[in-house]
Image 1 (cartoon, helix red, strand yellow):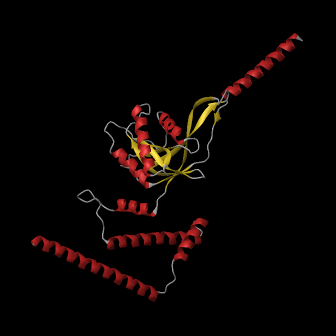
Image 2 (cartoon, rainbow, N blue to C red):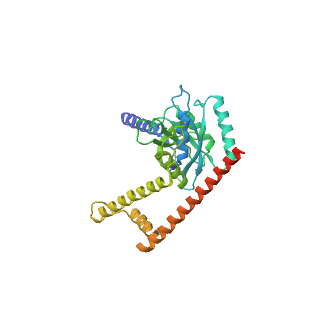
Image 3 (cartoon, helix red, strand yellow):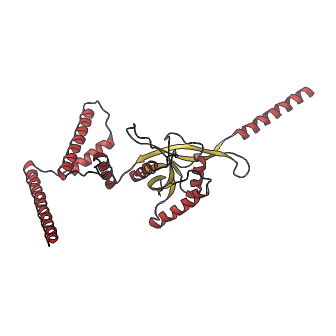
Length: 312
């Protein structure tokens, strides 16, 4: 009987020990709502410009991200400003950030702080990034997520710029008030480049035009721009026709979204016969030639007037 009681006592103690071990090794992960980022090209250009103008001893640059947060958790990155210091413990770091943030709030109060950026490997977050992320996370608040945007600025041999966005969640052990805080777990979130029509035109202009002798962009003529637009339209039309032929032949899978987009595009084109189209096109060309002729006459008169003033 004594042996049986001792065995039961040892089994109970072993069971209690396993329960305590399970409680102490349980890891609690605080999860947030799903986040999706929309990145404007102006922010990307500002980051690359900051990296280009860095000091020679700087390996990377960091800065603050400004934008807005939608009700569905989508974070729009609209603007940014650089921070010269990358040491968050330095006193100048906080002073410079507060000053720049106040100035941006005076200019556009709708753009709130949504995170920060850093150049480097787009696929990982470094150990010293946790302190910087905590600095910005305290200032974004609990209502909106804090986004860490990593940009690979070494684009010499790359065909496109590498970007990666991350958000953090708290890791803690249960027990006591709030548990025991262990650290932060960074997880990647979806990040897409979204552009307005004016931004898209500007990006196309920068990528397609050449640099002149004075360092500025060389603008093409109106006919060159028209030719480029027509060639681009023809290329897009051929791609669309190839996709439709592939779907009809069973070589490609049908997509309802693409079908709706094509139907909307076709329905937006007015129905005109060949004679009516040629007449309308001819009138527009004549109007354009008349405007160019009047502009040339006005330019000649201004030049003649300047020369007369110089002779007087």
